[in-house]
Length: 414
Image (cartoon, rainbow, N blue to C red; front, side):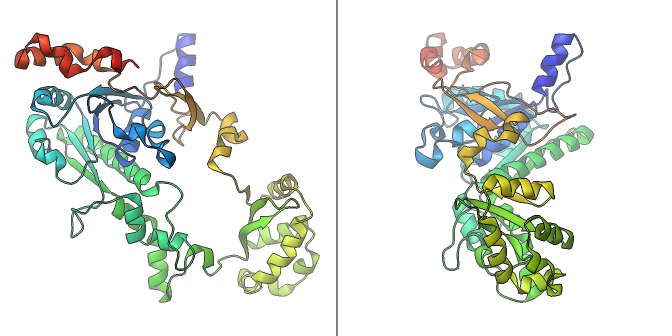
């Protein structure tokens, strides 16, 4: 969409508006669930104003180790304004922002927004069209006030059990519930915007980690009820297909290969010269192949051990067989498909560095929703709201103290 609009502007053609252009979102959030929800709305064209504490801003900016990528990954295309929502001196300024908003996002602990006077009922009385999206660990119920993290609900919700080896529950290798919970928040917001077109009224939307996790493992829940048998973790599950596994090439590199239909089985045998298997009539149907899975693996692995990873990929791709090398996330920054298709955006950080990050996995008329602005520095956009803020400061505590509430402009520009 960014490239499309740039081309249209250069040619003098009308610029196509982004889907959520004209929608203002005020984001009170940290970590992953709230920021991911806000970023998706921002990528879709909404004006997203992230409210951060004065000083260093959102603590997520400074997480070490595996948390160091959280803020860069989920805060592009946003504005950053610094206000302390818990302080009376900033309350009028915060309320002014909320009064101007179509959507409010928050993912603080249960009761925090209400304790500061920013609950839905109070804000809706001021702004009846406000859509209030509250992102929590649990929806209402016995667990409603528990603290939650992605790990908590993965353990509680069976996902860690299904991911690890027997007796070794393991969290998934990404914040799947946080991110998908944010996505469900977006779905709720979009639905509420559509409803507001008809009714003129906003509403409160709730999305939660635990219920999201339950949605993710729904197929396993159904399997347990249908089979009446205890579930087995994915690494030791009863096979659905004989060839749906990781194998190794001549250099011991790992590669996933699958054959999930009778036609794919025949193509696999033909392409890799598995004559012994292709002539065995007991292997003509899926159940017969599953029953002899170990034998098939031995023969197939022997054939793959004579080939390079490139040769295996070429053979499988030629016959339409599912195939994939086992990559790391770091490999994706140079992935031929992602690079060639424009799926990555070089995103600037407040430090002056740049990181390649994936855009939304969507296209509109063949075009992606692009990067419009880099990850903001804390309070980078205070100046754009200075007039409104300064008015309130002058009324409440005098013009001389205006800069105290807005923060030092020199600090915000760093």
